[in-house]
Length: 90
Image (tube, rainbow, N blue to C red):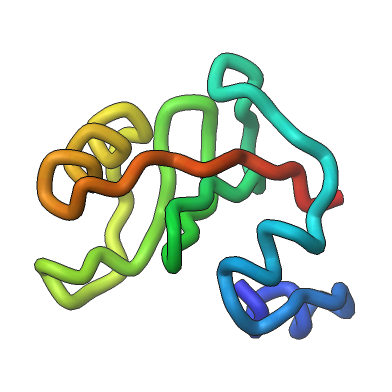
C-alpha cells in the first residue's frame, strides 16, 4: 500500500497498524467501494469493487483477487483474524 500510494504522490505509513490509524474515514462493509482499505491485525487488502479485493495471500504466496466476503471468512477460518476496520483513503 505504501509504495502504491507514494508512487501516486500520496503519503502512506509503512505498517498496516499505522495505516489503520492514519486513514481516519471509517467505512461500513455495506458501504465499501473501490480503493477502500480493509484491515486485519497485520494485514491489509484493497477493494477493487464493491464485491472484490486484491491482497497478498500468504498461503498461496502471491497477490490475488478474491471476493470480499470469501476473503473475510477464509482469513477468520484459517488465522482466527477478524476485520478490525475499513478505511477510505481519500
